[in-house]
Length: 337
Image 1 (cartoon, one colour):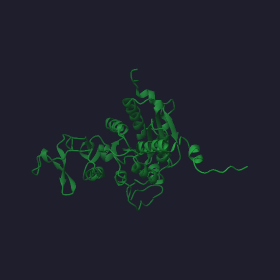
Image 2 (tube, helix red, strand yellow; image 1 turned 90 degrees about the vertical axis):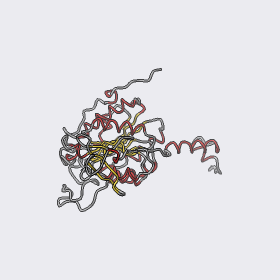
Image 3 (tube, helix red, strand yellow; image 1 turned 120 degrees about the vertical axis):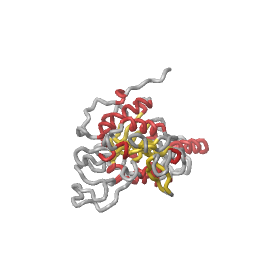
Image 4 (cartoon, one colour; image 1 turned 45 degrees about the horizontal axis):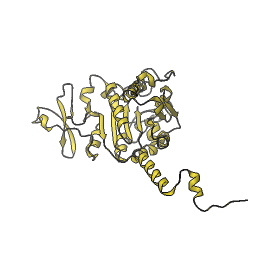
């Protein structure tokens, strides 16, 4: 039997999309449909699980299994769903508030366990659904309805949390980088283990232009770098700039100036087990050093749900248990008459 060929339309539901015109969620939804079609996993073998927030409406717009859960619990529910349904492809959708505030603990433990789910973190640095409060990723000093005089705290950097939890896959894109977004979503789904994709998006109502310094078409070439495994770390309008090692850090240089040549420019190795350089790349913010987009880290490690299944199979073979009832009745029992 030939493999079924799917189109993006096969993954679209008939629901009216209820996001503000101009919201970055529209572009991400469109790219997700295309990525799913490229992967070719049947809609009935796909589940999209979300928490609460603007981005968490996404399961309504998918012609797949979907679960709009409770605030911050998407990672926990996605973990349970994957362990119970190992043959399903699971996508988890969370915003920066839902995923990193009330859901922060679930997020880091899903990454630490290396559960085979695809975690999309839609980061607009604001609570949009509740009308404009600062979030865990809002910059220090950010003025909002809940911080009228500016925040007095430093934000979470999602990549830092991923690497702190020994994450095996981290990628990043912008809502306006449609080709890159599709590339990283496909790679995330093909990765075995927890994959985290940070998608930087604009909120046209409550945080408009927050990423304009990297998303603006004219500024983007000099303020972002698209990392590709095995290729030189080059950026700029004419690819005339590159990243070089500077002690224990990184430095942006112009090739041909100050004695730097193409040979000095680093080659990206997304598969290196050490995350030392991956973290440095992911921490670049687009100001002094270009914002890294693309696949930053992609390494192998034991997968939680596969290990659970293997352990269950071993115990069943050794003990003869095939259900919870079998296990309970295997020991001493009392009958009450």
